[in-house]
Length: 178
Image (cartoon, rainbow, N blue to C red; front, top):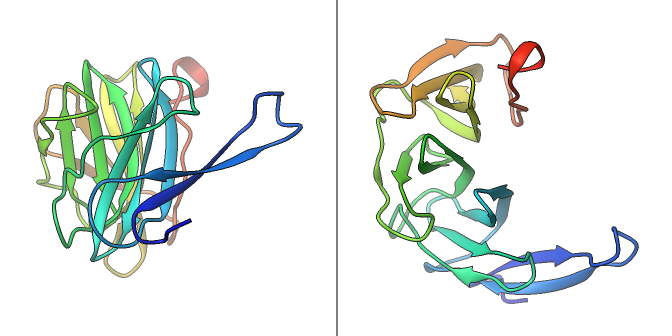
């Protein structure tokens, strides 16, 4: 695998008994580290990159054949660390706390409501019951933070969660989720 232009993605066709590794070309320059793979709105979307170098995104309808899509953050950007879909839009966040949204996973990403989104991001989800995107991350001094923004847009609303280094989250609906 070339560390400069690819994500390493593995897949299984037999329920996880055996796995096949595949190098997937990713857009942008510089090294690529895969951060997240999600199945959203009928397709797999993988995001990643290296902080200070570039970000990358690839998509697949079958998990085997991948298409380089877009680097919404441009050159010398932070890595993409989260991707979510909801309210008829896709959103990605970077590890520097930037957020971008689009109605297509492949194009048209624009900066999305960065007001109130502070510190670094570690993950992104969507709460269908709350019709909001949820970013998990850290603000300065390693204080855990959850920020939400309505799918219609606006400013991010941060809430401290009391743990210094949150990295993952689970989002659900009803009494068992957000």
